[in-house]
Amino acid sequence: MEQQSKRRSLVLKRMFAGLAGLLFFIPAFLVSFAVACIWAEHRWPGDGPAYIAAFDPAVIVAAILTIICCIYLVRKVGAGDEGYWPRKPE
Image (cartoon, rainbow, N blue to C red; front, side, top):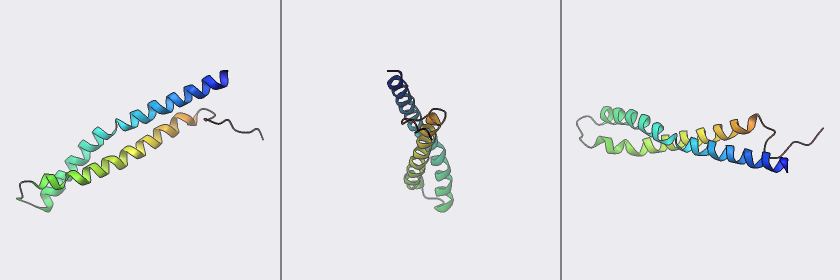
């Protein structure tokens, strides 16, 4: 019974870590959008809607960073425990 509660606790910790990683999208998008807007203004000077061209790269960069953050947080949660499946004794 205790093994099942440990497993459930680990699953919940990993689920919350994944959700926390998804919340990383907003700051990642804002920072990458600011950098992409500066790049777009440099690339196409004088063009008014150049910031529209910066939207796609900002979303892609934010999505990639969010995936990396989710993987890192989920792995970090299980690193101290014995993991979802206990190791076989050697």
